[in-house]
Image 1 (tube, rainbow, N blue to C red):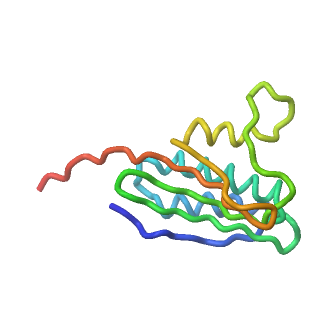
Image 2: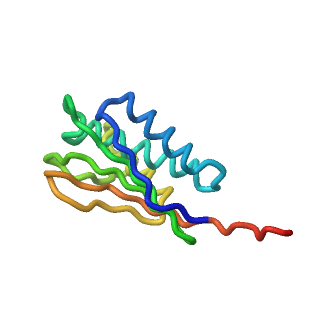
Length: 135
């Protein structure tokens, strides 16, 4: 089963991170990849709020989900900022960058498109084979 690209925009606040996760949960209910997708979007939304202009008063971020037969694409569009997202090794002091290490572990691949005016941080999950339906 494939869904069209579905997007929803959220206010750039910590409370909206929970709402973004619930959005993914609702859209991917029953999918084997749903739990990993929830974690990935939670991390990407957190980064948007903490490290981009989306976290300023009145800021916003958008979560997009696109499914295909063999993969699930997730993206979080933020309002840009001076630093580009990057993952840090687990032994690095501090918390910054550790969420992207989790994304690296869960996703088949991830990346960043855009610049300091706005960017999409995206991740791809391979879809698990679905059992054949017997009739």
